[in-house]
Length: 340
Length: 120
Image (cartoon, rainbow over all chains, first blue to last red; front, side, top):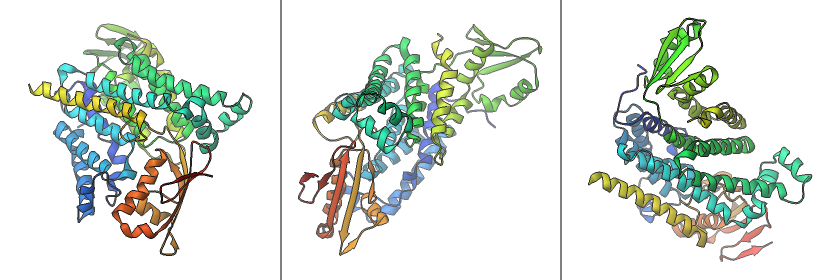
């Protein structure tokens, strides 16, 4: 029941397909009631805007089903991308970079080709951070720290910032944070040009976005979730994974339900006598103890489904918990990011 | 041939984003240029239509904005919402509109229909 239907995509790309399509379902624009202040006059001539809105919502839902259940992933993504695009251009107040990012990822997935691997998705992530960094770099309020000072000190009323900045010369702390953010964003764009630095770049990205969620107590719609999903492209799944786990109640339960944890059935679990150590064989490279567990988590699709669902569910005023959990996970996984 | 066509399309799409990012340096446009939450506008919008002050719900129906709030795109985009609505519904041109806003916590500014921006 839980086994994922095999298709032509590598696991990381298949996972992006299935995760990215969940995002529009959590957005209120899907059930928007009318077209509003459109980018193109054509939309203003439509006599039944309500019908258009519901048609788009229907298209997106069908697209989600086609992609998530791998019935016709590319067609499903095309439905969602079309729906999102029309939603964006038919409503100026509905515009957001998260919607645009989801649309871009969908477009690149539709045109994905195995022989070019993740190159185009990688370029999209580079363009995102390049654009974001450049915009801040040339903004006088980012250079002087005025933006950060206002955002943290006034809009968010972030107590730790207010108290610390009082003890330091005018705007120094805000300037430090501003330049750190600019440095990380432009640095990520640069680091992602070389394979050797992918892991560092991704780790920096997770930390940057998680901290911003904690500080803002706001998950920025589906933006953080969309960005995290795009990072999965950089994770290459091993060809062979053999997990030798000591027999216990927990491991027996994991073997029984391993299709839920690993629907792609990439991890082969072998129970060993209870007094032995846990060993993970990843393409003939062996990991033991905690590092084996970390690697197993990293290659468990269910881990990503849980994180993304966790990032998307309403926070009811406690969105900072989402960021805190992400920071914790990123630090727990730090040794994994250092390997290879 | 088809695969090259796909790569070409993706490359054009990515290149177009870079062009938009660069062109945004010379204009106030922040749509499709990856500038998420790079600006914080605090605004107070007051619209009087037929001697009645519009409430939050009515303003949201018009502009997708409330009477007081935050906006994370440049003020020109905010003003565009108002002018665009008037272009579509000329009857709204008779309304009295007062928009007060400040960018990233700096001085309050005032926008009037004539298009003039006044520093308060």
